[in-house]
Image (cartoon, rainbow, N blue to C red; front, side, top):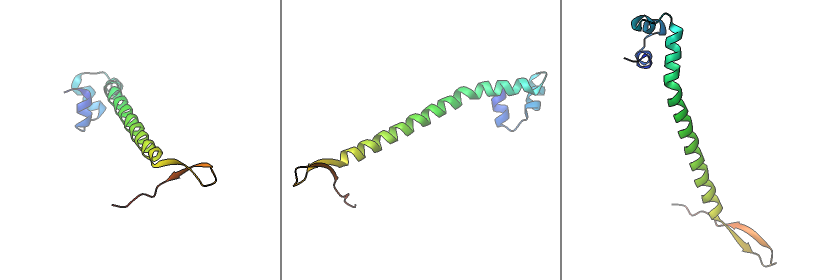
Length: 86
């Protein structure tokens, strides 16, 4: 079983080091961190992309709800129609 799974199983770094024959727990810690770093980076990028997509969709929805209208005085303004309830 890889060191990362052993930590997930509740083993301490020292127990993993002893079981795998490493001289100290620091080596196991570095192995676990090296295994986790790419996964964490992928999670961060996925979260950022999801946030950007949500903000983009919200901005489009807000933007499309506004209309330019020319008032009786001839001045062009932005106007948003009231949202109808369900």
